[in-house]
Length: 113
Length: 112
Image (cartoon, each protein chain N blue to C red):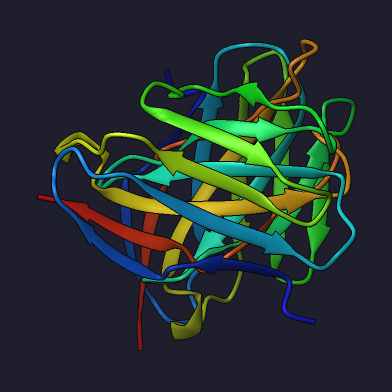
């Protein structure tokens, strides 16, 4: 099983450009998450989806949008990228929100110039 | 704002020694989890302890939880060079949000 797959793994954008990070899981999990990780800081929750059809804001949602396309897929969109969004982005999934372990993808490294 | 704060931020020990990392948090929790991250990789779940549990073991890992002090510790016994990684605690808040919030992590270096 692939687990949680994120694409792309690396991306360089110019300020103001838009892009979408894709995430898919093959574990039939109900809940999915997007986190960002900056140097010296832990992971910060951007958005999460407790179940198909629902999305909720996390700690740092500004500048991002998400779409829970179906049970497997959860995408993160940057409409107008800013240098402050340079980070490593992690997608994760779990059976249900709040009760068990998260399974993480390998990360997407985004640089905004 | 960060819910969990790990202490120390960095730890360097000799192979075979024990490593202890601490985590403090601010609000009531449903459960607390520990994760490991190898350099350049995603996080891997190590252990989960519920708010009504005080201690849990998994192999060479021992986790304790003190809800009165809002703190947890992770002990890795007989450390190996392969244990070199960053370790994060994460808490699920006791409110209805069920958000999993991570601390800033402890970087562990195990010297051969």
